[in-house]
Amino acid sequence: MSTSETQSKLRKSIADENQAGLVYIFDTTLRDGEQCPGAAMTEDQKLEVAHRLETLGVDVIEAGFPVSSPVQFRAVQRISRELETPIIAALARALPRDIEVAAEAVKDARNKRIHTFLASSPIHMKYKLGKEPAEVIELAVAAVKAARDLVEDVEFSPEDATRSEWPFLVELVSRVVEAGATTINIPDTVGYTTPDEYGALFAHLIANVPGSEGIRFSAHCHNDLGMATANSLAAVRNGARQIECTINGIGERAGNTALEEVSMAIRTRGEFYNLHTNIRTEEIMRSSRLVRQVTGMAVQPNKAIVGDNAFAHESGIHQDGVLKNRLTYEIMTPESVGLESNRMVLGRHSGRHAFKDRLVRLGYVLEEEEFQQVWNRFLDLADKKKEVYDEDILSLVNETQTEQEFQRYELLSLHVSAGTGSVPTATVRLVDRKEPEDPQTITDAACGDGPVDAIYNVLERITALNIKVERFRIQPLSEGRDAQAVASVLLKINDKSYAGKAVSTDIVEASARAYLDAINRSFVAQPEELMEKI
Image (tube, rainbow, N blue to C red; front, side, top):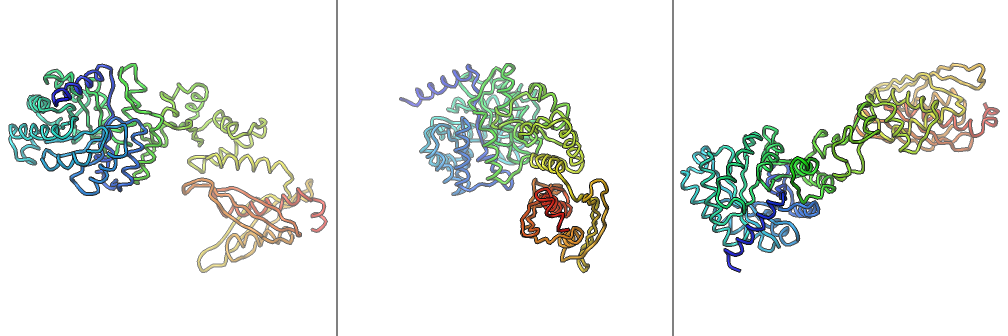
């Protein structure tokens, strides 16, 4: 098939897809995203991300800038050889060597593209290129022709297009289309434009560039003013049929358009856009987490779609609404982006309905009196912690249920003095319910090698039991400075072993309560025998 026949076939295919409302997703995480400070990836990491992007359903993967380094070249080459479905694009400046190296890097790809670019704004042409507009057009045409001789699929970008003069853009784009470019990208290189302005630019180009019906116009936006997603969606509303974006919106400066945002916007508001993509949105979260892992770049909690709080509800009013009908506060399901469910964040703003629902999900159906006790403990804990986790709730239930059993000793107060150069001392006040009708209050103090040892010494003296600590362990239940910890002990009391545990945000208090818990359990197990030995 001749070159002209091949191009005619390609342009007809593009025209058909344009008519069908298919928006190509062009992922540049491995190129523009990697240019973000600190986000550089190894060859193996780039390959791993590329495979994930293929699973995600990305149409075009811009695998890198091959001429920039041997690592970039090898990564593009390996991706081209291993991936089967996506178009693999390599970036090249409008220079013969760049284009030749890019073609060599993608030559083994089943579907390949060269993406070449040249600045088009007056400020870039004057100060960066030192070229007149006519010279820029000739250089761009020559670059597209050179790329077209090596691959069938050529994309051209007039860099800083949104600060370029519209008549000049029409002339430049018309000439490169005539030279063989089949995708025209209009980059908002510095995040300067607005949705209305950007949409109007696409409408103007499509109306004035000959043969535009067979061209795929593309939006490439940066987020310097926080409008990258809005601008990209304005472009597709005005005829663009490719969006260039990155996972988690990473990229130069404030980043690029976020793939997850535009793809979910088009899916969620399908009746408005009347467009569709090939993205398997259920793979979004896995893709987001992989990019976080390999780049080391965290995602802000309130980031749309993939942030930790994107499907989280803490307000009692919101939680109650979602539990009754998700559509009250969720415009898309968490399952649609790869999450198992939404997240009810239990904290000081939560209501009884959400808390009871969480208990049921954890396997506990409590009578009203017992529920009230657990609820009151939850409210106390929620005042100390920003978020109460499932492990915290289980501990509250267990504590409440344990307290319904016989409790010989109850801790009323605890004071510990310890520090460098001082002798650790613990003072405790207990209630002794040996005679339930006449409980006694006992206060005592003791020293030890450390604060926990001092506590255990004074408790052993008060209880007058022969106690040996066989095991003592502290484990965090959750994360953060306000995390709860569970203290667990195994005590040998009169030749028998008893386990005890307690939970608190104060590990010293937890240690004391765990010790008492084991003692109290020993009385529940064999109260008469132990009573006789005291």
